Every structure is written in structure tokens, then in C-alpha cells.
Amino acid sequence: MLKMFIRGKYYYHLFQHRHNELLQQDCLSEELRMKLKVKATYHSSKAVEFEMKM
Image (cartoon, rainbow, N blue to C red; front, side, top):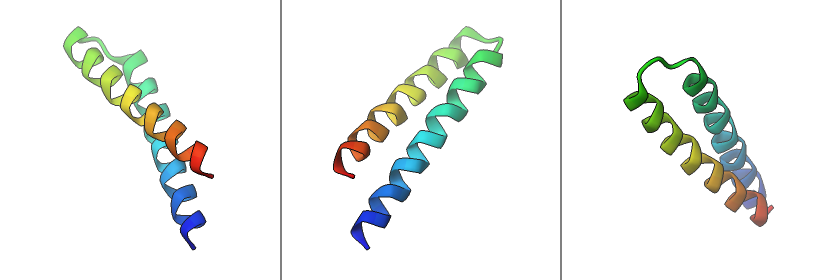
């Protein structure tokens, strides 16, 4: 049960990371691009953290 929860959180953060990366590529505003980059980096680090737990 715990393993399913960790796997779900891993896929959530992986999805959010990829989503923010795509938004960042299409963004015109530098300010918004930097905010999306910070969010993508956060979700990437959390995905790696949960990948290590699996």
C-alpha cells in the first residue's frame, strides 16, 4: 500500500515537471519563464527523491 502511494507521488511530480518544462518553452515573459523553471526544478528533485524510495 505504501509503495503504491510513493509510486503515485513519483508520477505526479514527474508529470508536473514535464508540464512546467513544456510551459516554459512556450512562454514569452522572462519573469514567468523563471518561475516555471523554479517549479520544474522543484518537481524534478521530488521525483528523484521518490524514485530512490521505490
